[in-house]
Structure formats: C-alpha cells, structure tokens
Amino acid sequence: MTSALGKDLLALEPLSSEQIRLILDTAEPFKEISERSIKKVPTLRGSTIVNLFFEASTRTRISFEFAEKRLSADTVNVASSGSSVSKGETLVDTARNLEAMRIDMVVIRHGASGAAQFLAERIESNVINAGDGTHEHPTQGLLDLLTLRDHFHRLDGLKVCICGDVLHSRVARSNIWGLKKMGAEVAVCGPRSLLPNAIDELGVTVFSRIEDAIQWADALNVLRLQLERMQGGYIPSLREYNRVFGVTSERLARAPKDVLILHPGPMNRGVEIDSDVADGPHSVILNQVTNGVAIRMAVLYLLSGGRPELAEAAKGGGGR
Amino acid sequence: MTDRQTTVLDARAMDRALRRMADEIVELNEGTDGLIIVGIQRRGVQLAARIVGSIRDREGVEVPSGALDITLYRDDLQTVGPRPVVGPTNLPWAIDGKHVVIVDDVLYTGRTIRAALDELADFGRPRRIALAVLIDRGGRELPIQPDVVGKTVEIGRTQRVDVLVSELDGRDAVVIAAKTSA
Image 1 (tube, each protein chain N blue to C red):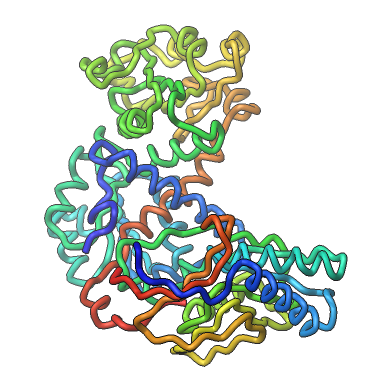
Image 2 (image 1 turned 180 degrees about the horizontal axis):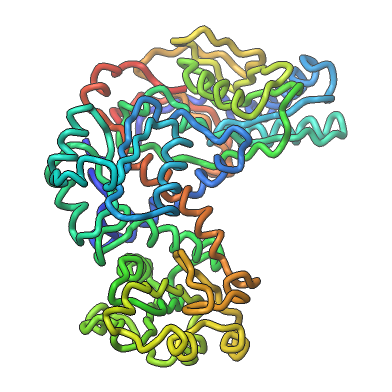
C-alpha cells in the first residue's frame, strides 16, 4: 500500500494541487509540536532514516534531522567526505548497503539532476529529494508555499516573482511548479544570462528590470546568487549585480504596496539582497526556516507506514 | 448511506446528559479550582465546549479548556494507510499539578485514551487525569475506565455509535448504525 503521495517525494512537477494542499494542511498541526517544551511525538518510533548528503548543506540537513527526531525516528547521517563514497563507491551500491541494514527512508541531496529518482527506482525504501543538481528541491518549494499561505491566507491569484539565478536554481523550479499548480501567477527577474532559454514555456512572466518586478509582485522570492557562477562569466561583477538587480529598501519604498520578502538562504548580504531588507519588517526569511521543519515532518509522516501485512494481522482491533 | 439507524439520544436528551456530566465533573473536582477540560479531536472538542458552557452557566466560572489530537500517538500508525488526517492540538495551559478532565464522544477499545494519556504526559504532570465520555459502548481492549459517563450502551462489534454535533453534523444526536465495511 502506498500513501496518498506514492512511495517517494522527488519533485513538485508530478504532484497534483490536491497532493500539495494535503502536505501544506498536514504541516499546520506539526508546527505546534515544535512549540512544546517536549518537542517530540512517537509517530515514527522504530523507523530508521538515512540522510545521504553528497553536497554541502547546513539548513536543509539540520531541518530534516530535527523533523526526523521530533517524530522519534532513528537517524544516521552520511556525508560524501569521510565515507566510502570518497573511495569511489557508486550511489546505488551505497544505498543498497544501507538498505541491507534495514532502513525505512532515505533523504538524499546530490549534485546530479535526477539522482533522487535514480535511487528511488532501485531501492524499496521511501526516498525524499533534498535537492538534486539544478532539477528540484521539493521540500524548499513546499515550505515557501506554506510561508506565503500563512501570510496571505491564499495562493490562488497571488503574484510571486522569483529573482536572480533561476538558471541554476532547483529552488526556482520547485517554486514555479508548486506556485502554478496552486493557482499563483509567477514571474522571474534576473540577467538574461541567468534565466533558462525556454523560460517562457513554463508559463511565467519575465521581467528584465527589478523595479518592474517590485511594482508587480505581492512577494519576491530572492534566490542566492551562486558565487561559484562568477567564474562562468554569467555576470560582470557582484557590485554591478547588486546595483542592477539587488533588492534594496530604496527600490521597495517605491512599490505601491508592501512586498513580502522570501529567501531560501544562505544569503549573500549586499549582493542579491540588502541587510535592511533581509532583517526588515516584511521579511519572512526566518519563518521559512521554522516552516521547513513542519513541512518535512508532514512529508515524513505522509510517506511513512501503511504496511498492509501488519494491517491484516491487526484486523479486529479498533479505534476509540 | 441509508442504513437503519436507532437514535440513542436526541438533541434534548444529549443536552441533559452533557449538563449532568458537567455537574459530575465539578463534584468530582470539589469545585472548579485547578480544573482543565481537554476535548479529543474531533467531536470531543465540541462536547468539551458544551461542558465548559454548562459549568459557566451553573458556577459563573470560565474553566480553561484545550483540544488534543491523538493521531500521532496512535498505536496502529504502522498498519493503517493512507495516513490519517492530523488535527490541531491546542493546549495553552500549564497542566502541571492541575486536574485534567479528558472529554471524548465514545469510549470503545480505550486505545484513543491510552494515546491521549501519553500525549498529556508530554505536556506536563497533572495532579490527576479523569475521563468523561458521552457514550460508553463497552468492548475495552485496555484497562481504562471512565469517571463520568453520559450513557452506557451495550452493542456488538458489527455496530457503530455515532455522536453527531450541530457544529459539524448539522444536528445533535447519538445514533447506532450498522458498521459499513470501511
């Protein structure tokens, strides 16, 4: 028996709006657990989850780990450095060995697009994509949706502009799919060299001036300018990027209404976003982090359990 | 669903039962000091609100109340699928040293109450925990008994007791129906 989401969470693109809504609604009661003095429920007691991080991550890895621990799962962290991965073991061999130790779920972050799906097709355990190459980062997309819904109480008709390095951003892709499925209007804004060629085919508006984006939007999701892209010659200089595309309080002051500011982190203060905006009254950047734990708890809960052979054995035992 | 239904309590009888339960809760606690009423999601929450209203009418005191969703504490989560819907838990009071009364609609196997006791222990250490249910239908699978009961009904495994509340179901009633194979 599979859950309402299926076996894995690999991307938002294949999900229906009902499935996305189910995850967002399920995250709501999970917020309360993190406010308790004993931040733990016994839901995943006895489940073993492996966090397989082939790429550096602080926020996402810790967020998953908190979510797992608050649901009472047992967790193991595997990083590529210091593991047999650095000895040349393949992804599938690593995962099969872990599975031979009877694990239930794998959370994977990998530099190659499609790595999570590749793994999901080859192992029995539930697989959650924590970011694969430039493909998707579905739990980040979901926590952005939840943060927007918390603030505006709706997603339908909401105008959201994703700013910056859309080309290399899995966060952007998950946001575009998620927002469009939930009925929001989506735009992107950034230098042409950092926008995908076929961006129009995704059904989004393209702004080449940040001022126009700010005039239009209810919310800006400001992406991290991946500094390693500098070597690729995508932008002339950080200073010029800030001057042309930086989200600054001066630019926001000219907007017709308050614009909500999101950023998936880690921030380059003074490059894509100015400090007074990041720390300002319309920033929900830390709400995103808080919501990340609730979203990941909801996803873990929805993918877990449902062992039909045990259900058969327990038949007759009722509720109440 | 047009199964034959037998009404156990109509709206007026249900109201009388809840008022009597409210009186018994105040007697059990010897007043309203230190009392906290906690309803179990979903229909226990509405019944708890009625009991709080009844205590307000009689005693002129607003007793603190909360809502508990026990889904994440169920003992059958590894076996049931798809995942049950999780409702909100809202218990904004410190329960240490207090007299907590759990309110639920139907007491059957006792497994829900086992879960509720575990969840309450994560919120603190009450002086006492009591159990008030509108319907006790027997059939316990755990050593759990109610302190306050609205009505006891003896029915078999093939039947189901439904408590209807106007907030969610459009009317107040308690009915017995044949269990549909769900």
